[in-house]
Length: 540
Ligand code: TEU
Ligand code: CA
Image (cartoon, rainbow, N blue to C red; front, side, top):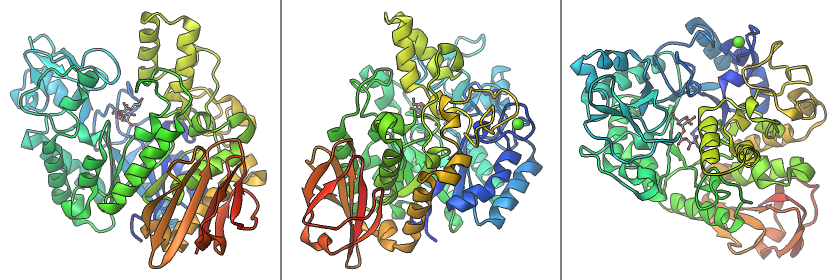
């Protein structure tokens, strides 16, 4: 089965299931839930980092790439998880954080101790540039008691690696081989479009310095080298690159098969349509016209140039999409299904973030004390400094914090939502008694809807292989597209609002078959009315 037919499920290990009652999710917890994931029907699970780490950025600060963090279990636990997954026909994708390492990593420690070889593993300069760290503040920090500075595009405990050094590249390629030998079948590469830095680094006032280090031409060379030295040789291995602040032109280059870089890319443009002036720490209703324009541009161009998108609404860095794009108090269930259809029938590989399949929502915390994420805490301080009141700053963090998606998985209505018997590392969301797996499997319909979408992708090749065509580009409520493959067509209509709307159905689809809808099937008349948050897919 090609990566185009697969559906991938993302797990944030810290928050999935705690089996040894320390308040932290673990590998045996994931293993225990493999049958649940099998029932959902996903093909592969992506685990956010499980390696030793001081956890300043929840594991995206890696201190050792080829070991398991004791907090999650042992290498044996990992192998057992792999075996159980395999028995159920589920593959494992690991998260590779290759742009930076934790300053606890022995490479950085040796560099600090004066070892010249390891100093060349990092980006050290006499003078900092004006680049701003993605977690706030200048992106350079003093390197020990030398008079040099090291680059950290993220937290100051995440030091950027020097990919210009061939020894660094070889070390990282060796990491991939290590996990491939264990049977890992997928890699998600963290902010991989930032690895290539120019030889001479210059100030860049535009966009906090991003253009100076993002999607540099040399990055494509490094990814191609990595492909050739490791996964490119292995059939069926899936690679996805997380691309920060990228462009469709670059993502086509990263994913066009003949370039031998990656299978697919994540980009975040569609998740910035509720950012005022492009700034995350603001609040604004989402701009539907902009969302459509992005989906249509990326859909069409990737289709025409044979690039491939990773499709997603949620991940561990994003507030829950239901809270952003849907009137969640009144239409949570219809909205969850509509959002799911919009991407699962689209051209690209869909990703489901844990809890999405039961329609989980943001935790609705009452105070700042509940938040733990480094980015949120820094942003709160910056908002206060910028003159916001505590209440205003809190409201923004509440809407935007990455912790929104990191709260424990809601398994049942137990005290800690069936995640653990003890207080978890991050509080459980308020909705746990209403929204949880046990209840969903008994009486809900979102999980079944996801099951059906996953199944359809395998049954109707048009979903995996069809081209992408824009439908009703100027409609104020509907995001629609047509897929075409071998004489067949699939029309997908998604009403993004709580208001009904009537459209004229093209003649060819009036005689079509409804593949899936979140409302009871109705007749396909020329004048077709979509109900609030209705989604419908018509095949002929
Ligand atoms: O995120 C990349 C990234 O650019 C994030 O800063 C993202 O823009 C932000 O979280 C949205 O507010 C990846 C990982 O997914 C994230 O968890 C890590 O913190 C980051 O890289 C550093 O490794
Ligand atoms: Ca545990």
